[in-house]
Length: 233
Image 1 (tube, rainbow, N blue to C red):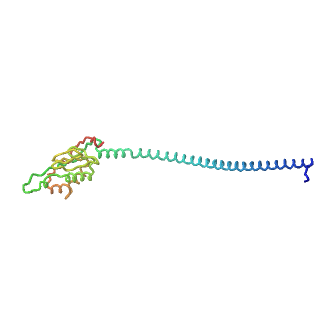
Image 2: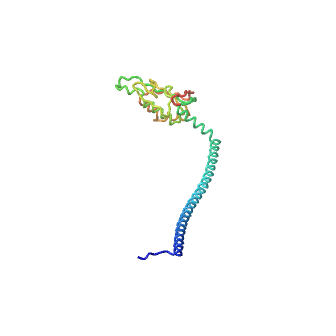
Image 3: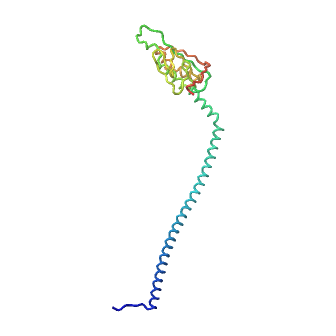
């Protein structure tokens, strides 16, 4: 077999070709890596630019909201100042009216005192309930006084609150857990004209009580004092 031998020139050409190929491959890989890095850097730049735009938009929105908040705060302060200047006395009066209804402050003024007493025993009537005062009678008077605009109401000295309860237990009534025997005295502070007109309506409260054989006594235009109810505070 004939052996193939490189000449010096051929060997040099082979070395040059191999070196050139290596350089070309390395350059290609380097160029590819640089291109990929460039693309990645471009994407990072675009992402950073997008974040920067979002941050600027958010800052502008925050600035707008801060301005709106300041304007609303100023408007609320102006409104509060107008309310204080114009309606302060009215608000105080309304608050006092609510405290009177709750029984949390003492009350004093002219009003009406209504006393309900059992009728005399009638042997001809076998039903004892026909001549004694029941809780319904007390409720009737209290409701009428409230409708007439009573500012404060008490039953046998017990101030009534907005959540007071009254129930009948035999010959006594229970007002907010306290028992009171007959007669029952209901006091109300308020406009005497309104209360008197309401109580004395024809066919009204007084006529109904008299029809039920209840002994009714009405004392008008009296000076009445009611202490604060601790339970109503």
